[in-house]
Structures are given as structure tokens and as C-alpha cells.
Length: 133
Image (tube, one colour):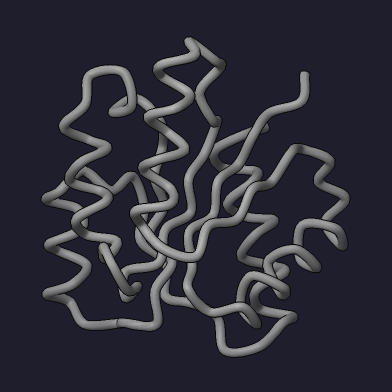
């Protein structure tokens, strides 16, 4: 079964490294990328309207333009249909206040964005094993 993973991150370089990390972990699931929270929510609303299969996992950056990750998380978790999707926050922020707020809003997990590709590859493998295997 080919699952779908959604990633919202405004940094083009980070999106590229996510893609490479999925490839190097031999993860064949469909991975779709969004530059901001509004794009991600628009896609999810279209899926609901079309009664399409919902994604299996969402990786969400906190600091994005137009709509930040916390607002997106709050919107997703407030929706009965979308709220069941696991959402993992992957952010450069290691501030305890940010972590606490994201968990309070319904995040299933919070990871500090790795500082290099090798760490990102390991993180993606761990997240995949935890949420999708």
C-alpha cells in the first residue's frame, strides 16, 4: 500500500534534503511538499472534499510565512476528520515553550531539526519506523 506523507517547510534547501533522506532510507511512499501552512491546509481541504484517502503522516515546520506551523497544527487537530493524522513538528526551535505549546495543540511528536544531512537521514528513518511501519 502506497501511503502519502505531507511535508510543510518554507526552506527549499530543507525540502531538498528531506527528499534525499527519504530516497536514501528507501522509503517508496508518496511524499508531497508544501512551502507554507496555507498550501498544506488547502490540499487537505481538497482531499476531504474529494473524499480521498488522507495522508498517513504530516511533518510540519513551525516558522513559515502566511500561516505558521502552530496555526496549521491547531486547525488540523480541531477537524474531526483530519485530527486523526499523526503530525510531527520538525523545527529549528529547541525552546521548551515551543515544544510545550505544540504538544498542547495536539502534536504527536516534536523533533528539533537536525543540523546536518546524516542526522536528518537518521531522523527520517526513525520517524518512518515509529509512525508508518
